[in-house]
Length: 75
Image (cartoon, rainbow, N blue to C red; front, side, top):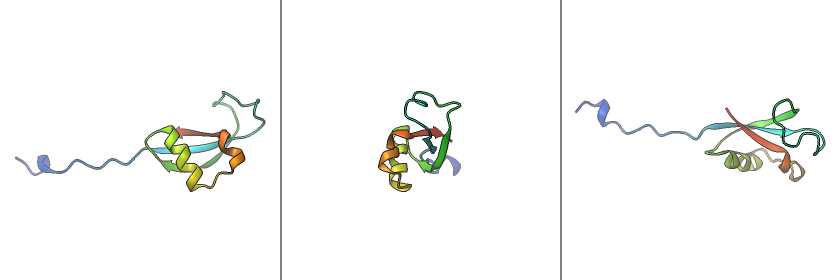
């Protein structure tokens, strides 16, 4: 066997997610992602969208009032 075939598989990092906070009134931007104004919160690494939002709440100290405004976009 060749040496390259005996190497351990590379460890995969979880994908990166960009976290945003919607701006404006609750009814104005509900259900829309494209075209709605949003503020960039930060980048986190997680397996899925829900995990990314949970990680962003912890890492970036998101206010309790803004939790419902968060959404994630895969980088």
